Image 1 (cartoon, rainbow, N blue to C red):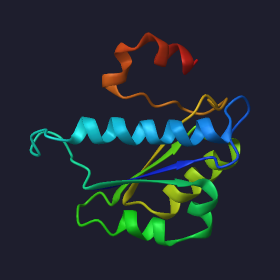
Image 2 (image 1 turned 60 degrees about the horizontal axis):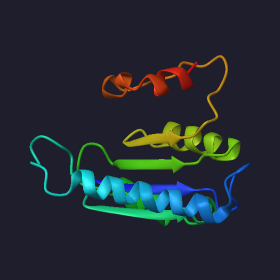
Image 3 (image 1 turned 90 degrees about the vertical axis):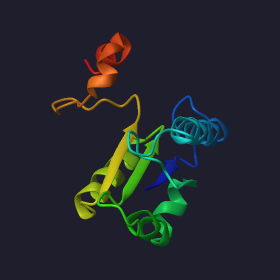
Length: 133
């Protein structure tokens, strides 16, 4: 499986452009550390993880094709890191148009009036639950 991490090139609110890119690189490191060396029968292992800016993602359809060209049933994962309102809309559009790709949003922008999904594994974190409210 492949993972693509998209970050806002111009930053977001209190997050500078430099910090947004650094956050995306840290996310990549965590994914790579988490999947390296684990039993492939127990965990999905990402064969490659890429980091691109939001403008690169929108302007170059090759990134989307790269993620979806994976041989597995799930075409890969796109993570929108430090997502702005515009990136949230782009994530929704991407998920709707590409059913084989899992789309994940890391953001503090929890929308009102929408269902918030939290993994069963994440429920142990009271902070995640409180941030969803």
